[in-house]
Length: 432
Image 1 (cartoon, rainbow, N blue to C red):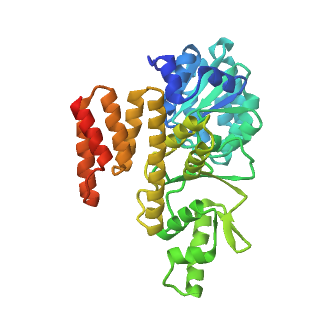
Image 2: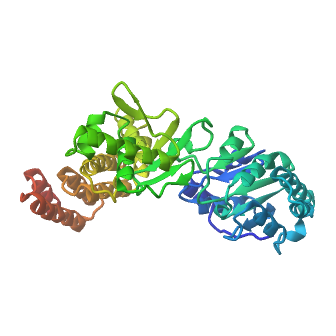
Image 3: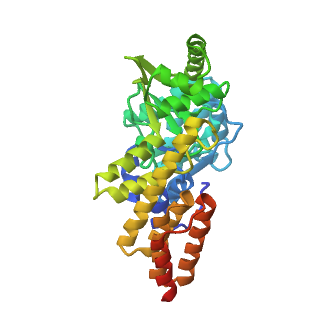
């Protein structure tokens, strides 16, 4: 049995993964197949959680790049020097007669049933990305849950994982997904199977996934730019689009370029991104769009009218804002949107800083306010807050240094001095 040892405390694992052991166990109980959510930022901690909690009952197997097909993977697994002595020979016999994927699943389940003298265990499949999920692999894994004995579970860990067959298994309650608690809209699994699943991380480098797979080729920059514009503008007219992308072209020429570009987007996604009705292009109802900007703005807006839940909503917004909006694009509409989102992010940080200051958690308050100043270094009232915090913490020199930083910033950016209120604050702090 090939396992790994981890010494991370249990509470630390829960904090890192955002998943409690209680929820962890509840989710996987009775599920033949368990999937680690591919977009979880701390999948290594999820692996550690499995190996910590089930250390004595895991058979660990890591695929490599030579195991791209279902049959190659099964063959290599059955001959693995650590695991082969535990298994029977039914899978190898089925491979030998070129059995159908469903028959391979039955044989594999039978071999797993006899391993470890019938004791409960998990087969942990790591680096699962190497297996290409073609038609044979899909049929195999759709059949596998019914072929597994009750005391065996298969756990799958992959950096990338498609929508199917996993969504079908989850909807049939034959599989569970772990680590999706903090994913956008709960992740791509468990939703209506008729919907395409589009993930757009405009606040995390601009990454795009469709049905669990990354979109990396756009056939030029224009389809990519128009795609982001459509995602960020859920209701827009053709004239608005033309004014942004083709302001110097005539209507006929712009229309031709627009439709060609729009078709390329559909080809890249394998889905229609928009529909047209009543003079507006809107998001297609056949596509579920997971968009971090929308969730960030929703959380910040909801916090304005919800004093009780405001701190939790601010925390949620901060977690979503991992980088500036589409940092690699330099287009007028992108720059304008980026500036507005930066300001909104800075305000969320300020709100959290002042919330912690109100709770006398001065270190936390200072951390959030300093982060806000890295985003908006010219906000004088925030510099005042930081000076006061340093003063409360007995850090007089740091408070004075903060004033000097503000002084330099205002002179560089606007050619002005700090206000009289800030100057008076400096005098009070300096005199103590």
